[in-house]
Image (tube, rainbow, N blue to C red; front, side, top):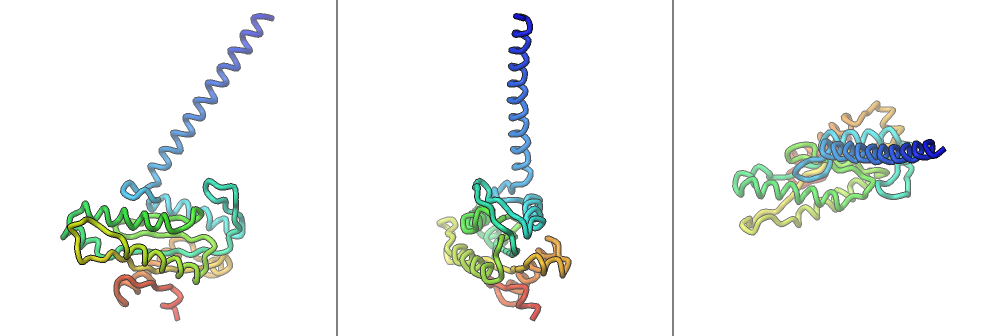
Length: 219
């Protein structure tokens, strides 16, 4: 009987140790996943992380999406993809140095992350480009958020040696609901392509610091 009791105690100890090891393994996995999906300069999602996270909630449209870190969930009815190009990054790099160029990108990323909601997704698409997925945001909401972001980016201050320079960005966006997306057979990359096309219209044809909806250029 005593031997059996000792064996049970040992088994319980082994189980506790195994649980600790599994918990550590999960923490390590999450840590590696975070490193793999985050942009090292800005700490927002990188392209891979943005695509994975945004495709997840696109697949959940008409379903529920839980707010990160919150108990509240939300029915997903529509989504807007906003594509953003930071203006004059090359000029800042060439004239004021890459340190200020990095500061420019980091400052824009902070504005984006702090302005949108926890349920939305912010990612650095690459170089001077960012993408945002706005959950349950139609065209009006996407325009409103873009205007707010534009105004806050304009207020960014870089190094003291940089004078007579206004930070700015060009915006393009597309808003769709689940029915529109399925009818047009749009996947995430189609939506990004169209938001990027609207951004190109803004930056190249209408001037920097402009906001354009994809619906405008389709009229």
